[in-house]
Amino acid sequence: MFAAMLTGWDRQQASRLLAASTRKQRADSVGRFARFVGSYPWQWTPADVEEWTTELRGGRAHSTIRGYQNDVALFCSFITDARYGWADRCEQELGTHPVQVFHEWNTARHTSDYGARPEVRPFTRSELQEFFDFADEQVDQARRLNRKGWLAAFRDATLFKVAYAWGLRRREVAMLDVTDFTRNAAAPQFGRYGMCNVRYGKAVKGSPPRRRNVLTTMGWAVDVLTEYVEDIRGLYAPGKRTALWPTERGGRISVASINIRFAEYRSAAGLPPELHPHCLRHSYVTHLIEDGFDPFFVQQQVGHAWGSTTALYTGVSSDFKNTMLRRALGPALGKEGHG
Image (cartoon, rainbow, N blue to C red; front, top):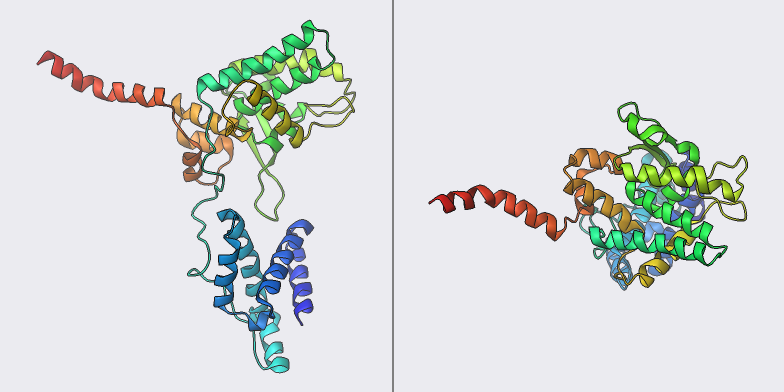
């Protein structure tokens, strides 16, 4: 009976065009819960949920636990839905029936779509400059020593600047093609790099990647990207391949490679260990807000569904706070001085 329920649930999800990986993950969560409680779905109780959650809390993130709970709750919703008849069949054959055992009193709340670690923060402007300067120094040093690695160093230095200048996640920047940059009639000064078409944005579970258009806001980044595309990328002999960040083997740079290179540069530059590639995206949000861009514009740029998520990404610097404080207190201090 339990196996038949899982099979029916998988077919129902497949009919909704959910990815096979999503369906497997959800089935694994149901199996994990069933093994923990040692009973079948028609025997599950809310107390089982609470004991399981207590066990899960040992070292797992809030978002991970919430995901497990949601997976099994969806399964319970399926087998208790009268349209599928599982409750009636269980009553006839087993003398009992399944119920929904996950409810708002025993599951983790989902207060926003942001689940990152709280210690993640944006770069300060000076830290960002140090990081970019160090990346550029690796290119210059490799060139002076006539090392083969200068080409990859140039590519990676440009990649990090692009990730920051357009507020991109790691996979979003890794999957860019040369053709993903287009003109923006409202900003002709940026030429063919007036807009970045993001094709691999963060997806809602079970859905294809989200797409969005990011308008260019930093002219210096256009100059950096133009130099890379026109003078450097062709040295990889990409042929007809359109990947913006090709590798020597003819492939596309991986997210793992981005992580490794970033950690290498961060450590060598003496920057704090809590900084990682996603902090470039945090910095983009923070610096645009500090520079006076409208928060809703920034929200649209980074593809957040809720303004509250963008607010969580924002960590204004002490210099900015002090500037705002002086601006706010200026009139009052002036009046006191005249008195």
